[in-house]
Image 1 (tube, rainbow, N blue to C red):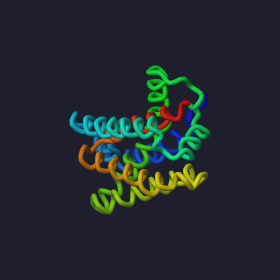
Image 2: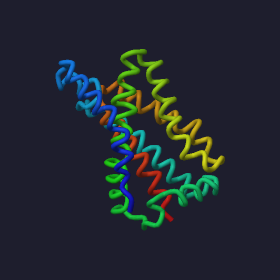
Image 3: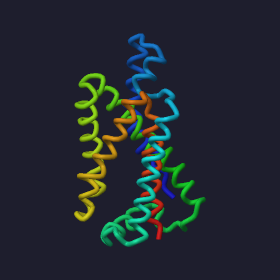
Length: 196
């Protein structure tokens, strides 16, 4: 089993640098935390995140179980998932959820929503800032899907919609935590469905 610690560190470093620079400039920890979305949120935003991600998970499960997904996508997922050989069980889903949440999605949320999204939304306003954040989030994910052209609809439709929704959650809640929950459930579901 491979833990993606370098990925987490890579995406978390800009937030850490921002924190250190702002502290040096005299900004307080609470303001820095607020600027990075490292604050709590109203429960309704966690419910939005969980509801949408669980709805998408049920839809993905149905598409997978009724063989509505192109066979090429299924093969791509099974060939490129570190979890593909695991058995399907509640225990394996929970373990995938924890691994994805701590080693992948936390770092991505710290960077894309906490550092970049917050900064862009403050500087450009919600619509432009969230659009730029979404484009950058999509561009970073393109190499994963360029291996197989059949997965391009995921890149040019699915990833931007997900990126936009997570930016929306950040904007409305002021926190990266709801988008982290959404992102983790989404990644864990995708990985779980790749299990043979």
